[in-house]
Length: 375
Ligand SMILES: [Zn+2]
Image 1 (tube, rainbow, N blue to C red):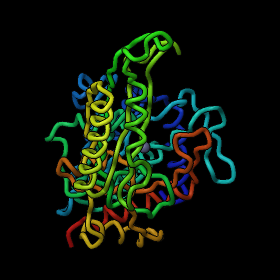
Image 2: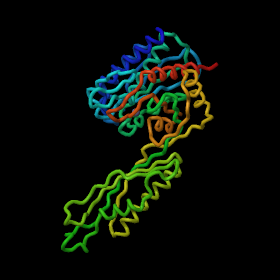
Image 3: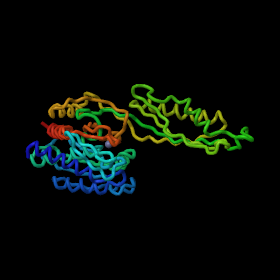
């Protein structure tokens, strides 16, 4: 099959993929479709038993393609789920760009990645390309906080390098560093009282939360570090001193020690605000994921850069403030880079992807698969 036919097949695969609903938690139909495709390409495909832990209607999809050469074991990864509004997606191709024609996202995040993986493996099979063993990991509920990746069994996190096909922007962007991410939910407790008759007896939890927020350093704190308050919810009638107030927020840094320092700083500001007012606060922190950082001269990064060059796209190494399955996989022992797949305006109804970017992504994958074979 020549490249033009491969390109047509790739687009058809992508269009078919986005037409299968797979909102987070309801990935079963799309997962089954992917598993059938993978089996048709000579891969073994199975679902793990993570659904009990994740609440999804299916597990993560794990596939393996035996190799006929020695070399680095590449893991190709993407996620099965899409964000809302993402049901009944009707893609339309116009001027070489795919968009959703209705009031939904397109779902290129992350079906551009899934389609590129399927097309690359199809070409490997039909061109009988020599290759080292390949693994595919397609996760559930990435959009809900990397839920599927966190639920993977240790035994399913194997390989030498994972290519996570899940970033927006032009093909060739290679994300080599992502932050450590902490979130909190805090509940301030004060004392309610009639605000007009005896406010002296009250302690306002809303005021506590407000002074904590004012004391926090928020926004971009340094090149690698950010902090934010998400939600403030509390109080009720205007004539009641608020007894309770909920506050949520987060901090992130590509420097894990700085992330911890800011986490402690935010924590202390909330406790101080509660203490000063005579109230109390309960704070629950969750580490969403650990950051990671591959060195720009890491040989695995070099392999991906070379693959881009072979594929005719300009490689660029970038750092990000967001997390992905690559954060979880790297922290759990599988070094990962996250690759841009050409998608734009993700998580919006304006989302799009250019057909040329889908093609370029497949070329990068094929070049990486070639380069992974030991010389
Ligand atoms: Zn994504």
